[in-house]
Amino acid sequence: MPDRYSEFRRIAQDLRVDAVALVPGANFTRLFNQSFHSHERPLVIVIPASGPPAALVPNLELRSFDQLKFEGEVFDWRDQTGYADAFAALAAHLPMKSVAVEGQVMRVFVHHALTAAYPRLRIVDAEKQISGLRVRKSPAEVAALENAIKISEAALADVLDRVRAGMTEFQVEALLTQALFAQGADAHAFGPIVAAGDNSARPHAHARPDYPIRNGDALLLDFGAQKSGFCADITRTVFVGHATDEAQEVYDTVLRANLKGHDVTKAGITAHQVDDAVTSVLEASPFADRIRTKTGHGLGRDVHEAPYIMRGNHEVLEAGAVFTNEPGLYKIGAFGVRIEDDVLVTETGCRSLTSFPKTLTVVG
Image (cartoon, rainbow, N blue to C red; front, side, top):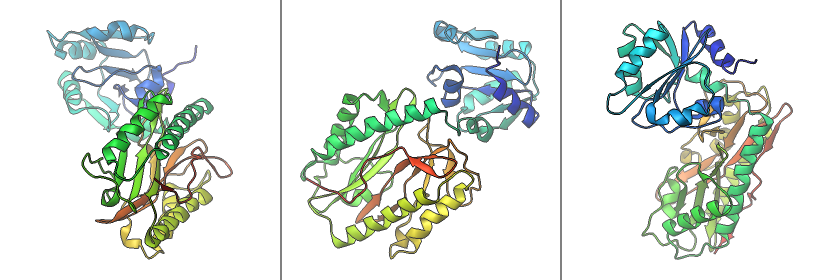
């Protein structure tokens, strides 16, 4: 039978460590096709370079864990007794001197529990290698992403038809949430950003309950549905009532940068080269002082994952990678514009998984 742990064993061998340890998160879900919550109760899977894996599991999760058809020993523990003895039993069963972990996912208290059970354990951050397994999307994963994006775009169309001057950002955010779930989302991919006027110049703004949207405001919506474990992430900036000449010029600049990203993307180009091409369009404009962000990030089971599309990242993009192309310009105290698509890298170019119109739109 095929070994479902072979990718992780290969990482352990390449890094010359005894094992790889996984905790609940996107990599765990990809491996087992089932998710568990991260909370105060540690759950750890240890996959050795060779031999059967082992697991440490909270007792209350055992019935759910049984569904994974796990092949190795399971050490459970209860809240009343704590998890230290279970970690000690794991260490007695599976001795190791070194382990690779997910540096952006494993929490400090789990790290401490491992080092308490294995006093001389060498812990290696293998975030790049482990998460790198998810960069190339399968056709089924691309289809799942497209479904999440389709839901998001339908919700956006519904909301933009209903936006009017005088509404608050908070009210628009509520409409967006209702529309996402009405269209079939399982959850938000992340907390949505709905920002108007000067708030749209804050790349990670929060909706205000007391700001009535005004005629002439930019209205930026950055959001996505989560569906079947995959995340959409799209942004469109519209204008309420009318757009000023400056707004039109800024919008056109951002759109040209976005389109440049599509033009240059293909398998074999680096993340640095994509960001450099996109950002160069913004830098050559009269609005270069409004650049505040990189071009984008990978997208899949996590809303932010590898590859990161920024200067200095010379990672080569391979066919099957999906990332966001989201240039923006932000004038503090005035307004911001961001246009974001989700892009699939192909051998000959790229395919935008996002199809929502990008022409300058006035609503309300």
